[in-house]
Each structure stands twice: as C-alpha cells, then as structure tokens.
Amino acid sequence: MLPALLAFALSLVLLAGAWQPAQAAPSERQRQKQAAEQERAALRGKLSGLRREIDRTESARSHASDALAASERAISDANRALAELAQEQRETATRVEELQQQHRTLEKHIAQRKLQLTRLARDQYLAGGSDRTRLLLSGDNPNRINRDLQYLGYVSKAQATLIAKLQVDLASIETNTEQTRAAQQELDEIATDQRQQRAVLEKEKSKRSILLAQLSNKLNVQRKEAGSLQRDEQRMALLVDRLSQLLEEQRRAELAKAQQRQEAERRKEAERARKLAQKRQPKEVFRADPIDNDERPAQPAVRDQPSGKQAADAPPAAADMAALRGQLRLPVKGEVVARFGSRRGEGSSWKGFFIRAQEGAEVRALAAGRVAYAEWLRGFGNLIIVDHGNQYLSIYGNNQAVLKRPGDIVKAGDVIANAGNSGGNEYSGLYFELRYKGRAIDPQQWMATR
Image 1 (tube, rainbow, N blue to C red):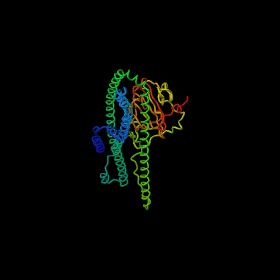
Image 2: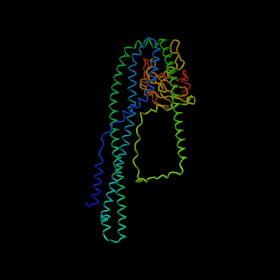
Image 3: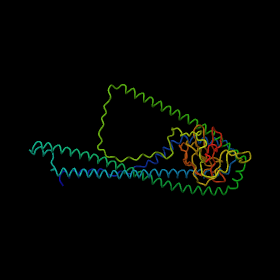
C-alpha cells in the first residue's frame, strides 16, 4: 500500500493492540451488602435490647410455640433472602441487557470511525499522496501549493479527530466489557445464593413440620388458656409501648440531623455569596466544543442498594392516616373470621382482625411508612410492624415470612410478608391490628365499605 494507507493501517493496528480485555474486576455485590448491614447494625442493636427487655418480663413458664421459634425464624429469613435475591436478579439482568445494548452501539460507532478513516486515507491517496515538504519544494504555482497545503491540513485534522474519537470508543467498550463481566459474575453469585437458601428453606420446613406434629396437643391446650391470651396481649402492649418510645427518639434524632444539614447548607450558601461578592469582574467561561454531535450510548445507572432500602437518616414516608379513614383495603386476601372487640376467650377480646388466608398469601402494607419491627414474638409468630407516622402503627402477625427489614421504607400496597400460622396458630392466615398512640383501634373504621 501507499504510505498514507500504510500509516493509517499501522495506527489502527496500534489502537487495536492497545485495547486488550481487562481482567475481571471483583464484584461490588458483597461490599454493598456489608455496607447495608453496617447501616442496619445500630437499629438492630436497639431492637435486640427491646426484645431482651420483653423476655425479662416473661414468666419462667415456657410455651409450646417457643420450640418452633428457631425454625420459624429460619423459614422467614430464608424466604426474605430468596425474595431479595429475586429482586436483585431482576435488577442485575436489566443492567446486563443495558450494557449489551451499549456494547452494540459502541461497536457500531467504531465501525463508522474506521470507515471514515479509510475514506480519508483513500481520498488522500487519490489526491496524489503529497506531503507538505514535497509541495513546498515542487516549484509549482504558489496558489496551487497554498491550496494543497490547506487541503492537507484539513485532512490531517479530520484524521486526528477521528482517531481521537476512535480511542474514546475503544476505551468505552473496554469499560463496558468490564462492567458486563462484573454483572454476569453477580448473576452467578445470586444463583449460587438462591440454591443455598432454597436448601435451607426446605430443611427448616421439614424440621418445623416434625416439631408441629409433636407439639400439636400441647399447643391446642395452651391456645385456649385465658392466662396465655392475656399474656399475649400484655406482651404486645409492652412491645408497642417501648417501640413507640424508640420511634420517638429516632424521629428526634432525624430531625436534629436534618437541622444540622440545613445549617451546613446555609453556611455553604453564605460562603458562596461572600466569595461572589468579592469578585470584581465575572470570570469568563470557556467551553470546549464537543468532538462531534453524535449521540453517545447512555451509561446504565449504577445499581443502588437492595429494593426498599433507604438511607438510615432519611425521614419515614409517613401516610396521612386520618385522611385515609374509610379508604383502605385489607392487607391480605381472605376471610375475616375474627373482628375487633369480639370474644376471644375467658375475659379476653380480639384487638384486631384475624383473616384466614392461604399459606404464603401476599401480605401488603396498609399505607406508606417505615418498617419498625420485623421479628418472631411469642403468641404472634413472625411479626412485622409498620410505622405510618403521627403515632399510627399497623401490625401483621402469624406470618410464614416477613420480607422486609427494620428501617425499610414501604409504599401502600407493597408486599411485606407472606401469611402463615407461625407462633403456634391453629389456622393459616394473618393477625392484623391497627394502633394509634399505643392503643388498639378498630381497623374496620379505616376499611373501604365496597
């Protein structure tokens, strides 16, 4: 080939040689999970202290359902882990698809750059392949020499610009390849974790089934004991009381943090205004023109922490419960077999609803709020409590699994649990309470009539 084409070919070879697939970057998934656990650690510590306080108030007499606690907690944890992994898998698969689309766009750009460079080299060859030195020494017409020199300058500039664009595209496709490899690695990790969690789930279900058969008669007797029902009510009242105090402390801490952030922002704004006032003349801003106007492939958004998680210092998404009165739906599909105020046992009455439902049925948040409690509790099994703000709490008990963690933000209708019969309950379903200022109130008043 002629010198110009050889030079062009050499430049492409050098560029292609410089682009080598990078070594697989370590997955960020484990670090993200560790960071999330650290954020939850403080709240988890407070709730652990609350559970210990409730345990100290229990009588020495044990309950048959306590033998089920470990298995029911493990079943709940495994189900929640599987739900989180499924969500993580969907998000990562979407990211892989976005990266693959970006890769295809970059390859198209690179092919276009190469074609443009080939055409420039060909045009230069057809023009005679002259260089500046030969033109100057040719003794030709000065006007023609000047015109040819200008043409060479344009061609050289166009080649340099295209090579710069090609280098950018090659660097971008290398980054894209690294990100795609990391995302695929995350998918493999998720699949491995899913297999492990399913094995744990099946093992714990089998263990619980055996225990339940062994304790069946004792559970039947204890369910009917008036003293047992009364202790359950006292336990719930104590939990709600202490939890309300903890939530109020948390609310005050969040308010103080918000005020600190506002004050810091106010000081920054004042400093910016002071510096601006000191400037005598406005500083001229120079903007470099973009290399070209073609669209660059959009970078996929960096995956955030698991769906549902929000910064620890963010205020809870409070629902205006007073405005929602008469508009809400039952949290699970099923039949209400026990209502607020109806007789439950000797000297006892229901403080909420019991909704009979299929095991595993989706339990949805009554309204927007933040998960305040998610743990096994004697008499209520796997329990989840959502703080809706303004001292309103919704309580969901006897679940097969709780799918959210303390501190998680939920919207109205979000799936937060699966119905079951944990805690030694006789039937599969959901025990549901609504409380205001710690006192149980009739959920029917908040339900839509149609």
